[in-house]
Amino acid sequence: MRVSNHGAVRTLTLHRPATLNSFTAAMHAELMPALDAAAADAAVRAVVITGAGRGFCAGQDLGDPAMTGDVDVGAVIERYYRPLATRIRTMPVPVVAAVNGVAAGAGANFALCCDLVVAARSASFIQAFSKIGLVPDCGGTWLLPRLVGRARALGLAMTGDKLPAEEAERIGLIWKCVDDDVLMETVAALAQRLALMPSRALVETRRALDTAMPLDFAAAITLEAQAQRELGRAHDFGEGVAAFFAKRPAVFKDR
Image (cartoon, rainbow, N blue to C red; front, side, top):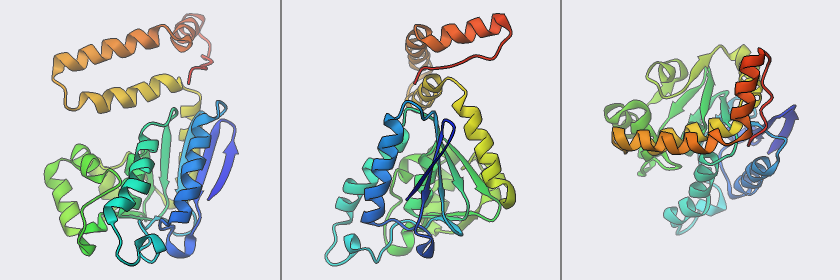
């Protein structure tokens, strides 16, 4: 795992390039504390996650000791992937995935757990689980139908076919597909933009959208009122309004 900072943006780079950054117990032992540290650092206002080399993440390394012998795959999910997916979905700042190459299995769904996914044109997404007799994990069963609908979710999960990044953007699986040579430049600009925005409001937007999915219309509006009540008492709302009337850039601080 490599960690770097550029202003208020922290970048976490998965660093097992020889294995397309596939997950191992050792990688989890580095990644989770790195995410927790970013969450706890008030100076961090956006997080970028990417992979070293030619891949983003090829999913679980099946040769890792955690997956050998009489393995309880459910226990592996509970120990590693449930905490990882939950951590990403509850980060107190926006999280951007810069998918620089193949994202397969848990690696694909790890990327999709992030708030915004920007992928290189040569990248691809593969729900590889059916090829080894499993179901999508790392939040995949929840994410896929919500992102692309039941028909496409089943198609992707059952066939395990490779989905090019350009097609992933077209069907709404990811936010954006860009040319390879501008991927990191595009993500850096996006992350810096997010870092200047009201972090607390962005995180509440994530929470409200996710929470509203199973609600009826009236309940969703009630949820909006609750969120606005809290945000309306916070610093950033007052600062945003003051900056609007003063015709100056706002300086947001809440997190």
